[in-house]
Amino acid sequence: MEKKKGFVFVETIVVCTVLLTILVSIYASFVLIINTQKKRSDYNQSRFNYRAYNIIKTLDNVGCDDTDTVDIDLNVKELFEVKDVLVGKASDLREKNVDPDFKEYLSTIADNDQCIYAFEFENGDKSAYTYVKIQES
Amino acid sequence: MRNNKGTTLVEIIVSVALISIVMVFLVGLLIDLRDIDDKSLKRLEYEEKIALITKQFQDTIQKYDTCSFSVDSSNKQLNAKCEDFYNVNLKCDNDNKTCVYNDYDNNKKSWTFPDEATISKIQVKNDSDNKYIYQYEILDNKGNVYILEISYINT
Image (cartoon, rainbow over all chains, first blue to last red; front, top):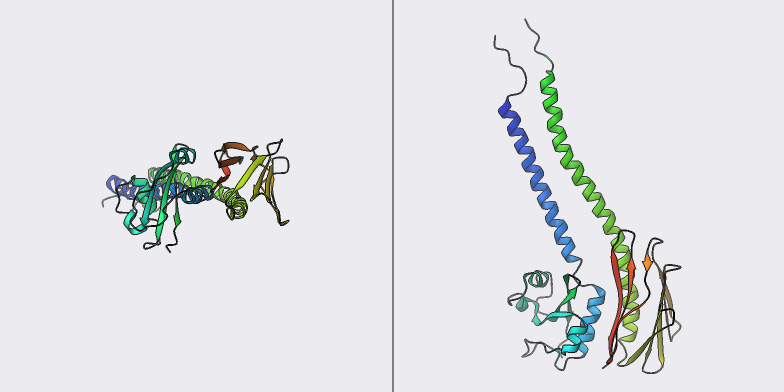
C-alpha cells in the first residue's frame, strides 16, 4: 500500500502564494486610503479659508461673469503665499490645465454649478487648497 | 498495518512557519492601524478647537471694513479694534493651556487644550500696509504643529 506522509511541496507553495497575494492587496488598499486621507488634511483648513476670504475682499470684480483670470495684488499674493487662483464653476475648473493635486482637490468639490474661487496656498513643503463660494447678484 | 493518523513533525513545523509569516504582516498592519487611529483622534481634537477659535475671532472682525491690531507686551494677547470702537481680543496662554476670547459686547469664550500641548507666543507674520497675519503655534506631544492664524486686510 502506498504511504502518504506530510504535505505536497507544490500545495504548500500554492497556499503561500495565495495568502501573500491577499495580504499584499489588502496592504496596498490600506496604504492608498492612508495617503488619500493625508492629502485631504490639507483641504479646506480654516486659516486658509479666511486668507481666501480676505484676498477676495481686495478684488475689483468678484464673480464668474466674463472672468476666468484673477488679478491679485503681487504684495498680497506673496504675503498670503498664494500659488494659484481659479475662478469659475467647479465643473469647468476641473477641465483646466492645472497641477494634478489641485485637480484632485477640485474633484472633491460637490457644487458643480456654483461660482467659486479656488485657491492653492503654500503650506511649508506642501500645498493647501480651499475654495470660496461667490453669490452672484 | 501502519497507523497513518496524526501529523508528522515536518507538517507541524511547516504549518507554524506559514502561520508565522502571515501573522507578522497582520500584526504589523494592526499596529499601524492603531497608531494612525490614535493620532487621528488627537489631531481632530486640536484642529477642531483651532477652527472654533479662528471662526469666533474672524467672524467678529470680518463684519468691519477697518480694524487695527496690536499685541500685548507678553506676546500672548492679540487685540483688534474695529471701526475705532469695537474691541476684540484673544489671549492664548501656555501656562493654563487655554485660549480666551473677549469682545466689546462682553462675550467671553474659552477653549482648553490638552495638558501636553505647548502654545507658543504670537508670531507676527505681517502687520503693515493694512494687511495683518498673526499666528500661534500649538504643538502636541507627537511633534505635530498646528497653526492658529488670524488674518485680515483693511478695505
